[in-house]
Image (cartoon, rainbow, N blue to C red; front, side):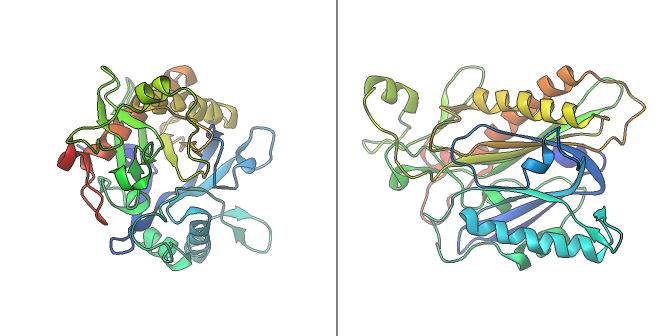
Length: 323
């Protein structure tokens, strides 16, 4: 059974990955459009077209969401996504053609691999070409290729993270899924117990330093001044939601990040969650509060999968190598 975000009817996912440069991008396609919302809670975001997704603004649907590495440079990949969609006549009708609507967000992955290689238009186009509705590849792929976790001691002691996805089916057949590139300042923890699954590697030996415990012990310690962290995600459902409902779903889904990442939403993170509602099971009535609560749980599961599926890359050990 497909337990990834593509379990949601109307959602396709494709990756472009450069393992040598340790960067990549991921495209979440909704060829028939999806009502979209967003919630940005980190204080150092790198985003594209998020204002269009606010409930007070005109546009209701997008055709794609781009999650990418490369920091702000990586937003160039959206041009390739737009070209791919335009070639297929997919977008907002403007009378003289279509304008594809592509929202997006970036992670900072320039500190590992090659800083001078970032996803561009050809990468975005290639990710669209690779998109499909099958199970999503996880770990060091796409937007998660250069992701790391646990930056308290600096990048030299971070742990390799990646991209994760998960899904659940509700009563009546409605699906809720999540996909996330996990690149936080803080630790990834087991939501039920708080056990650190991946964080700053302990220079004294195997295991991880608990970032929250260390920050509380050293209350005057300043977090690194440069915003080199963020966790970016998409949650999706095939239920029918209004634009307000999609924004509420994105807002509630942030609770899943808080369950699995500690600390989260800091001044040096740019945490952003997009929500998509394809409406392909519009005959089933759902309460947005239920969908949002499930989205939070699914997103927390996807975060944990991101670190468990990650492997050593560019000299950075994964949790399976160090924990």
